[in-house]
Amino acid sequence: MRITAFTTILLSLLLACGREETVGFEPELPIGEVEYFIFGTNAPECAADCFQYYKLTNGGLFGLKKYTQRTKKTKFSYQKESLSATEVSKARDLLKLFPPDLLSQPDRMGCPGCNDSPAIFVQIKQGNRIQNWSMEGDPGSHPSYLRPFTQRLMDLVFELEN
Image 1 (cartoon, rainbow, N blue to C red):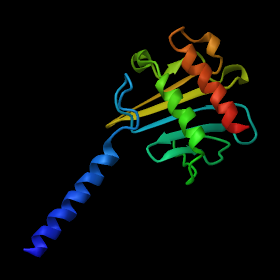
Image 2 (image 1 turned 60 degrees about the horizontal axis):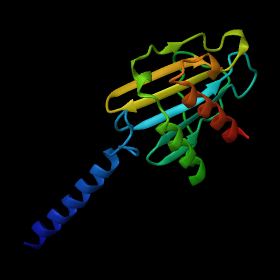
Image 3 (image 1 turned 180 degrees about the horizontal axis):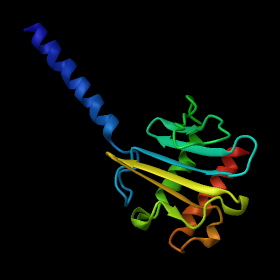
């Protein structure tokens, strides 16, 4: 009898923990639950620290480890320690600006990285679906629905890097 009660309590605790991990950190977003959100910029012609990417998850906001070049086989890894709660909050605010119309756009917008200008990178994972976008680094060249999001993204990356 004691074993059954103990097993039931243990199973209940494990199931409750499992549910907590699958809940998105911003379920009220118009795009639905998000498992992770990666955003940042990269410079096509650079000598060092070419990628300024950040990954927002339930566990916090993590900066990308340093990379100078990327190939199709490059798998980025992120720092193990989250940035501050203030920076996490700023990244969540950026995610709230994510325009739902972007979900129906192609993964490449404009000419990202052309003329040695920075490119914007965004990736969102929802369930089994991962979507990426690479865009020109000048928010002024983006459609009007996208500009508030990309301008804030550029500003936030600058803040996080300085």
